[in-house]
Image 1 (cartoon, rainbow, N blue to C red):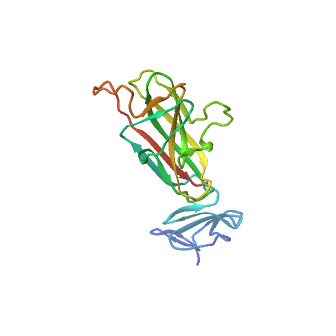
Image 2 (cartoon, rainbow, N blue to C red):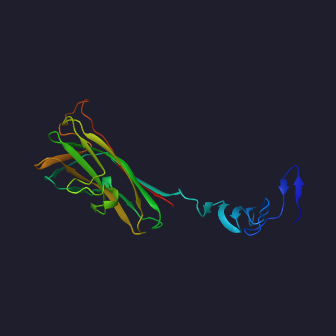
Image 3 (cartoon, helix red, strand yellow):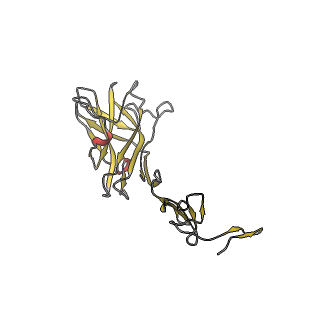
Length: 222
C-alpha cells in the first residue's frame, strides 16, 4: 500500500510489523506499527515493548499497573483481653482482606488504619498478620526483645481511642489465596482489655467517639 493523504481521514500508510514498523526514524526496526485492527504496537530493535488494544495496555517494563484492589471497613466495635507480653490475633472477617495474587512476582501494598482503645494509659502496638499469624515481611526487623510491629501509639485518655495508620509493601510470594488481618499487643505488665473503634469509657454522648478501621490490599504488577 502506498502512502495516502486525505483531508477527511488523514494520513494512511502500511500497517507495518514489530520487526519492520511503519513509522520509524533513521533506525528502521524501532518505531510504531499497526499490525491488526484496534492494535498499536511499539517496538525497539525489532522487539515488541508495548501493545495498545481495545482491551488495554501490555508490555515489557510497563510496571505499576494495578491488578486488583480489595478493601474492608469495620464500622462496629470489638473487645478482647490481651495478656502481658502476648499478641492477640484478630481474625474476624469484619477487618481482614482475602486475596489471590495473579503473579508471585508482583507486589502487594497493605495499608489502612485501625482505631484502638484500652483500659488505663499505656503503649499499644498493631502488626499485620498473614493467615492469622505473624507476618515478618510487614514488621520491623532486628527487634530483639522489642515488639516487632507495624505501628504503635499511646492513649492519652481512656475515653479516646488512638488511630494508628499502617502501610507495608511486600512480595506476593505466590499465587495462593491468603488473608491479611491485624494483631494487637500492649506495654503493660498485666492483662488488659483492648477495644477496636471505641474507648474504654463509652458514654452515649457526643463527646465520646465511635470510629472506623480499614484494611486495604492492592496488587501491583511489576
